[in-house]
Image (cartoon, rainbow, N blue to C red):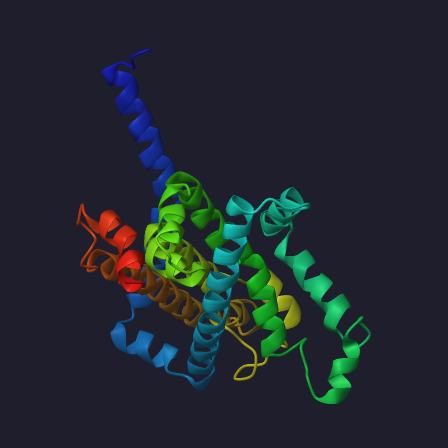
Length: 286
């Protein structure tokens, strides 16, 4: 069934209005209120000790969470696609659990497990504090970002199949050589997008983190918690807008950096990249 030109224009108009109301207007409003007093006021607001500490803590959590999720995500995706074992569907359901469970529930569960009176609460007496510290915030962020790498890599693995990997094994390549030279280059697009989503969600996570964080400035306050604290507790509206703008700028930089790195790869537009990676294990074993 063909859609008439007026219908197509109407659909496009509806989509644009929806995106404008949902995304463009709020973002433009925040940016306008942030930079209305000038760049000096914005710079001063994000140069406070609390803002610098929150920025450092947010970046530290991202630096810890992203590599762990990459390793776990790729291994899990390989297990779900290539493996045949009891409980595979259960594992697949667990991966999607963060999509269904509220981050607040995640925070409560972590407190029940790692709190003073929790199952593993005895670790506090050994000097290892999880709740209201960095470890708890990392665990909470790991949980909410769990599905992104897995769900981006999994369909790519299904699409490429196993023919190239089997050919490499036949030519004498080891499992590690096959993964590095065949599988990893093939999944790089999905993996890159999964890393971007993981980093963005880790930066913007609030619900689970606020439950396991003390929220003290300079101790366990991320940028999202700083926005909340300035707006709700301190009634510092401009400071909250400035912190939110900084958060958006970092997320945008991450997205642009990943896109540029991906486009600058020498094999990005090479039609022979697949065949060259396939024959690499054979040359390495000669």
